[in-house]
Image (cartoon, rainbow, N blue to C red):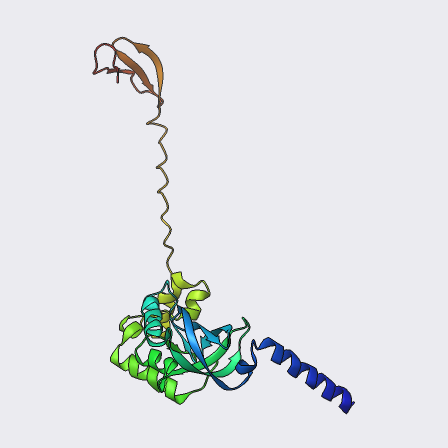
Length: 234
């Protein structure tokens, strides 16, 4: 039984090793050159002829379609593009990306993004008091995305809840009561019902006008005089 367990464990390790693109990536830390920036928290690196995609660990930047998403990408591009960096691998995610902290000249890109208010601390996956402190500092100073009254977390935006996200965050922050969102759809008002006494039917046309007989009982017939003489051409 123990032999079978050891064999299974060895097979599992082999699968994990195959999932990591290069031997260097399997190490905890290695050097590489940043070649492209997808957005604030996702970059491409070149290591020993291999091109790898890296997701910054511990942070989640606004999406490019969100406020401060472009600013976050610009900050990462300015700091890392075509720079030789140290990649400290923490994991490999479900998309095959390395999850890592990237250091350039002794600076931690994840920490810098948080301190500048260009990312959220991703506490769901990481416990790091340094990153938590960097985000708290940016919140207090109202830097970057924290200058907005109700910034929308990127994971809420990605979940397709962007329409109601600002309202949800207002409720979470205690700024609004937890009431349902009012419908924003505009309905055309229904036409008022026509009373039977106002209905009329045309009984005859004459050169002098149109003879109209009201539908109500006991009403007198009347003639609407035409205001135009001759044939009207448009």
